Image 1 (cartoon, rainbow, N blue to C red):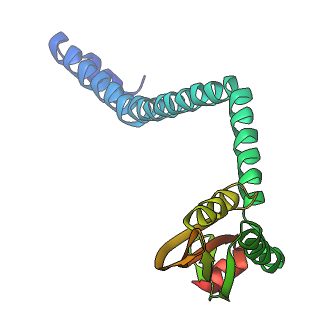
Image 2: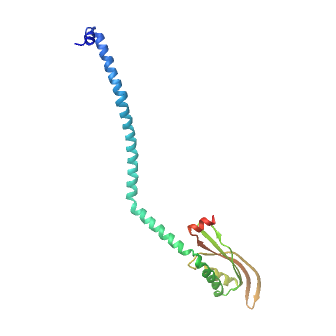
Image 3: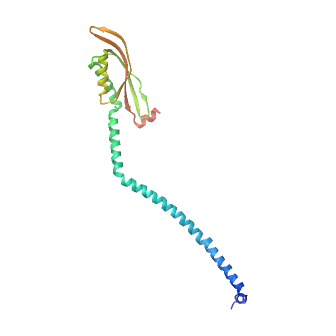
Length: 196
């Protein structure tokens, strides 16, 4: 037998037990340090990833369960956007729209003294297209003109209405009226970026 093993076997029992306990302690310590601790850290990481993936899965399931509703909302918003864009004339329609406004004034009995388009004012995604109008007619004719403009398919606002210089013309009172008709035009993305 090996002389070192024989030497250990000749030691008293308590020393042999102590050597065995120290050896087993070193063996268990090495196992804990090199195997158990890294494995438990890896397990904790995997559990955290699993919890995160479970939350994402639940969120994805919730979205998937509501997908028909989200699609319906998207389609409704798209339809509303198309309707809104139909109310905003494009650049080619602006001259005819402005001519229609002057025609509405004449159709409602107002005399158009001045019709002066002004410069466009670019906003975020649209541009204001103002027109200065000097008109002559009665208060009721102006009210009918405003009502006719409000019923147009396109968005047109009558702003800054100033009534002045009333004159008697037979049985009716004729006013000198100045106002601004403002319509709006949708800006293409490239146009909006140029405006900025």
